[in-house]
Image (tube, rainbow, N blue to C red):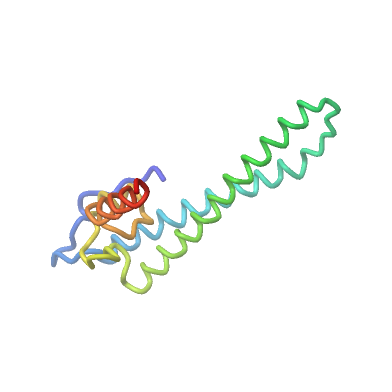
Length: 138
C-alpha cells in the first residue's frame, strides 16, 4: 500500500467530494490490502499445516502451542479486518463511502488514506472514544 493520495485527487474540477478518481484510488487501495492479508493468511495456514513437529520437551511443546495460539488470534483479527474492508468496498459501490456514519459529513481524505476502512470523521471518532472512556471509567 505504498501508493499515496495525490493532491490532484482531493477535488474534481467541479469540487465534488469522492469523485470517480478518488473512488478508484480507494477501491484499489482496499483490494490490495485485502490481497496482502489473504496471502499472509495462506502462508500462515501452510506453515501451521507443515509444522507437525512432535516435540518431546514439554517446554518446547508449550512454547509451540503458545505461538500457534497467538498466530491464530492474529489471523482472527485479520478475518474481521477483511470484513471491514469488504464493507468499505460495498460503501464505495453504493456511494456512501467517505461520509461519516454519525454526521453524514465527508471524512477527510487524509484520514481515509491513513485508514481506508474509517466510518467516522476524526471528530466523531474522538467523541465516540471519549464516551467509551467515560463508560469504562464508571
